[in-house]
Length: 305
Image (tube, rainbow, N blue to C red; front, top):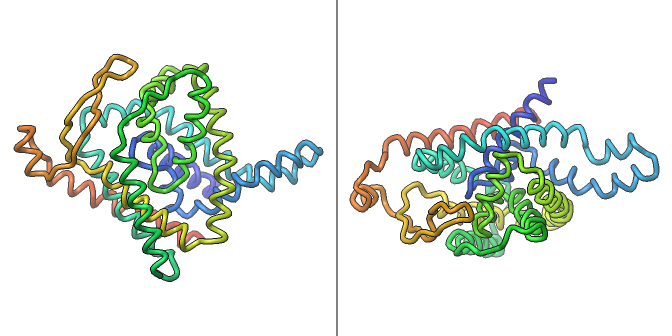
């Protein structure tokens, strides 16, 4: 019972991270020590489905680690449904505080993931650099006009869920780039089942396909894959830097003006440019809280193995 409660809490943390553009639930899964088990469970679902069709219910349930998945994703779904409003409110009213916390969380996560790499060869450094460059490009890309019809929502779900299980790439941010983040978040708030079912179907298909590939990559080229993931996380820090200056705005599908192009600036520049307090001390404290939380979770995960 205790292990299930802990797993549910990890699911809550993953769900909370996935709601925020720029933060990945995959990062939380990695630092809490369940990433490999999650990939193994997800990639085993197609084989388990075949066993189920043959009437081998117990074997299918065990092969897919369904007890693990049900508890974990119960936490993820509960967190998304309950925290969507809170996270949205914090992004609107306390952006520096929220981004500072996640900046510290992702920064120390780079160290946690990189520490698992057995040997830093030049190929690892090159892969790390490619990951940094890819994530940096993603964070500065301009939003697309993807469309919100059922087919577009399905493929958006398939693409976004791939990002959600990659440490460092946020599925929410991918939706933001597609221009669908407000649409999906509003559907979650209002429980619009027409939108949610189509999006969820895309998520399931994308999750089953991509988890198999990622599991294969970690088993075959673990150090290279971890170096790439570390680079992606490091590059994504550009998105979660707390002090930003909005250069241009756009009107989203709900008729609300949202930032289009932003540049990162230093705290003292933030105070001068925007004529408002940079909240430097609270921001540093929240960064340290994010670092302490990750190190605490990682230490607990290692002790519980």
